Image (cartoon, rainbow, N blue to C red; front, side, top):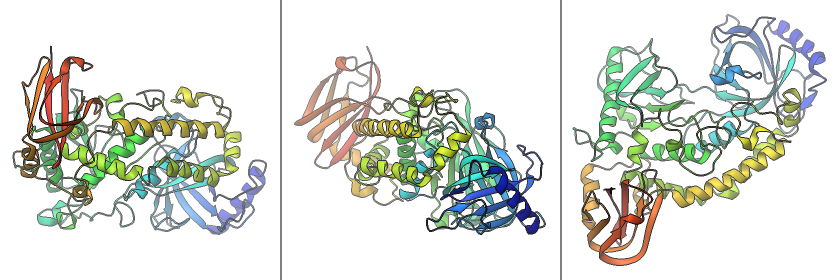
Length: 541
């Protein structure tokens, strides 16, 4: 088999030399022996990888020193299936065509990988950039590697090898469920579920999507629908229902008196919101949205993540106002997302943790300087492979669905990157101005496993004894507390600040609501020496 693979490899050298002779990136060569590649089942193929490392040039005439063997390959994606430049899934196989766990190009041992072909993303870097940010923020996110692909003797341009989201000690590192794990602690983990396009392989929530009368639908990722046992199904469904019951409650606690933070890893939900909103990912919250949970003895919290699929982000979409650096994507692309985030954005606990984390990240990882440097590092890594990619796919001056006007017709890759940077700087400025919450009592949220009970949240509110009346109000709102109010702010349901009063320094304040932009629900945040406190009210006329 290896001898035959090498014959194909040397045949390739003479076929593609006009487009690719050498590159500093790894070269991946796949050959299906004339068989077509379908969207299932996988097609048998050979795969060779050339990579010398250390900055040395890799030539198509070099020996495939990094890897050589068999694989099964198929096309992948949803809307991207219509692109000329396809994306693929591949499994590494042994000589008997069984799965083969192995490592290459720095990836940990596994058999399942993705060849993502950036096409409508003319920057070529969206996925690698955002997934790196998630890793830098302390979360597992699939590792990536730029390569150049030769498929069946034809040069295909720049691709990104990515890990698939799987339960694995080197990926989503949660416990393995077996047929014996049907009771006790063994039943409590691990699970991976997601929200996505399809309504199969899972279960229907008892709650509607946000601003939609259609029910949420959760899919099983691990264990798969065909593998999960009834006891395991009942457990994870019941747990998610309890969490949703807590989210929907006015007190954020369910009928077991459990606060939503007792179910989730709060840091993961905060960071998930920040990543999706910073990038303005049009698929955020509603598609490819993953959650996972390990055994109770291993922590047992529900994590938001791993984050996934950022081709249609960073202004690279013509819908959901993605191209506008202003506004919250959750509300601008609503109708199919879980209501959870809307509820959390009215929660004192979540918005305080969110503002604290935002200010922490903006001082370092999400500083303008660091973000622009990360973009530059990826462009430098691609080097002249960018020119070969757009020689193969000459689309820079063409609109490719769903490009926004920002990237619909550009003259060069440099112009794409410059526009991305300008947009990102504007996005950061808007989020700085509009991030809900106050950075108070931040030390409480330094523990990623922070949780708050209803009793604690009630106690925090009672310190100030903050009262609003009349509520609902037709124009005048009286604010009263038993501590001096230093400042207060009003937020609309989008989390946008619509009014601010600094230096109040009194315990009683009268507000004229007729100056507000419209009627509806609002949230008042008051700050005293003991902390920051919130109350909701309704204004109508």
